Image (cartoon, rainbow, N blue to C red; front, side, top):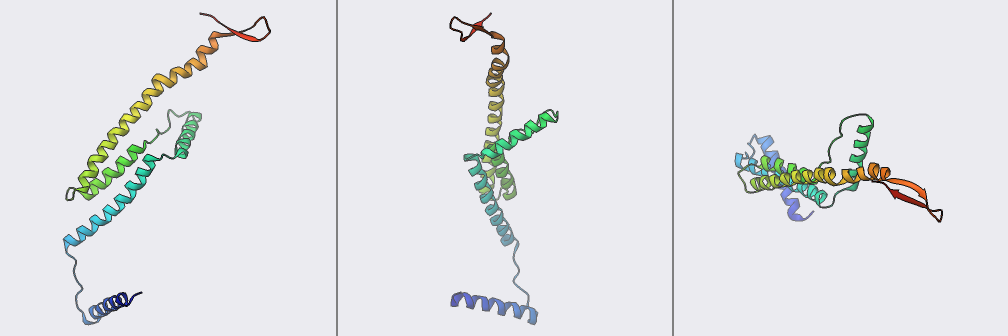
Length: 171
């Protein structure tokens, strides 16, 4: 510790002792200072959580999708209707932004900005969910039906002139 730091600590200790022994009243913190301190703490937590969620948004964790797939499979085995849906990274980021935007309030510019961006991310998440469902219903499911049912019905194995298997299409 430097000499200046040691002096500062000594003066703090001296002031604390004189307050306790002499009955002097300590410095009162006003409401504005406490509010500013709260906002700094909230902003610090917001920046850390939003930074973490943004990294997850930009670089999704493949293990989380695999875990969700396993949970959905287990719910099908148990006979449950449907497991939990995949939480879009946009939705998680939006919820963090909205939470901290509400916590900061309208007094500073950062709170409303977080709220606006959070709403936009929530809308993006809903559009992405809609796209996922539409692709599954209109593309993946028909291809799966084609593979599982239609192609098996169409194929009839017969041997050709060289003894290899050939498929004859009926329709």
